[in-house]
Length: 433
Image (tube, rainbow, N blue to C red):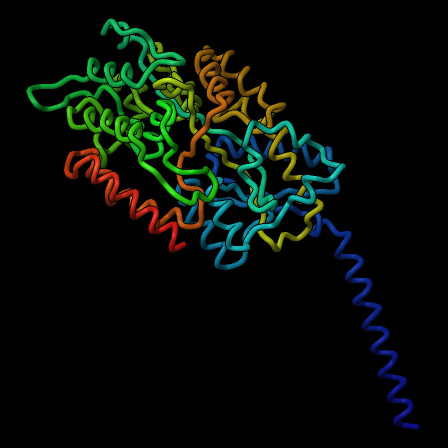
């Protein structure tokens, strides 16, 4: 009797425990914690406040979903991201460059959203992303995130200094020869010492030179933007490299290693005639209100119009808690959110074209129509080349470029043989990888 009673008691306890676990499981799956989506950005405090406003609207429209933004430093974002990867504590959604997305995806760290993107119940139209932007976030039919913003590149110029020098203003379809000629005219020297460079932060790295080379009809530096299998320095590449090397050695452009941290402030103060950069400087200039007219021109060309592809976006770890809920937030952050954010901080045009109107309207309303036109021109340019290597071995490739390219531009290595040496080392790395 004792054994039978003990068995019955044990059975009752087990059944009670199973019932409690069942209740807890049911309560957990329907609780707010399961429908909480965490995100992490690299944006400034001002932009994050606007993102918070957009998320507040989203949560009002979706009361069953809670979105929490995790504080993160925008200056050391990469380091923060790496530490979270090692600790396996990545948020449900985090900001990522296309290169980071490809690297983490290849390492098996990211959730594949391809089946969700191909579903029939999406809130956005997957065919409405800017050309090539969504495709470049895929690898082997796996979609490791969504592009959110597109960076465009060009030259910011001081219109007053151009007019004082009697130079025509830069505009779409201007040439590389014109850009370097303008830099020469706008440069000031005292003896052999440069007191004012005509062009700061010139498009001098191999990928920028590639833009010039492809415009001239040359073979691209990398055979494809995503995970290239080889690199090539065509005759056109070498000709374009010679132009930038000559400008560097003549002191018309800032040389490699030159401290350019203050170029935004220097330009706003009227001390810098031109600098190469992206559209993301527009919000800073709108706040600084320079006392002169300024503009933004697309990248120059040789023959054909070519621009640089550079998209940033959002990704999720493989261990994302609730894919269905997270996907809803992903779609919002790739589209409608920017309609709230960009009027207050016009940093870049959205990759999702239907949400780009507020960005362009904001620029035009603030007197930056030429900036809007240049950005739109770049976005609609069919030929695009990469801004950097997008591959798991990109960091090692960067070390090879740094070890060779600066010496080529400064004349410390012969242009032809120095470039080919770099190309050979890069191809060796690709084969090893």
